[in-house]
Length: 345
Image (cartoon, rainbow, N blue to C red; front, side, top):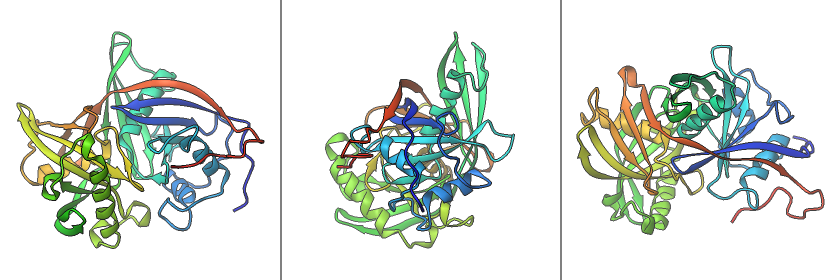
């Protein structure tokens, strides 16, 4: 693919959802080249490229923008974001291509929440001072909704309704350097593997992040060819995207309480409880009979932030959290800058 020149500047709006960053780029408003494809899923496949993994280097103009925004010195290894693109049809307000330091993803709950807040903040979707506004978004895994809760003229929370989640496999034995893990696999817009941290002698805390990250990478690698990780809609939605290492906490009056670290892409750590990963946990808890109708999962991250999740009929899940704007930026690349679009450490 021939490389087009980068634009003179790239405007972004940045949010965080429960501590996890989300950098928003409106492709049309920023004057970036359109992404070929008849749907958001097709555009994502175009961005991912022939390898299908989303982790191989790309040299398209849009992917150079991703590199510019996610790599140092303008980004960091934990950066996450999305390109706002046209929706599949007029049933949605817009579409989005989610990206991270290694490529692209098919689902992102925390990003969907941030986009809901952004759509209301910018007036793209009208919202009352008191009440709710529903923002319909096409993502590569399907159509999702961010219900933006408002009170006194401000956003107080966002509820992400995901595509249906399903359990694919239970207690799959996986060898790691910390021992044998029994892994549960569920699809919730992306494929997630769940591992009880204590089974590997690990605790879900900041001190254990290095060991948790290593275990997550080992599990992801070991499951690369497992049939339960494949999705009937094809390779774009197949393969383990994230590994949720979790621990049980005392139940609340409303239901289960867990803390997790989600390791995704090539060792990236979700600072939030992971929106789509929470959906996967909800499907597993419901199958175990631990989450009944009307009950909530209180789901904590390693940073102490919280999502609450519930399961609806048909495997549909809802996850509620908060998102806040952190800044508006206009990034530039000096043509004489030897670092170009940046570097990763």
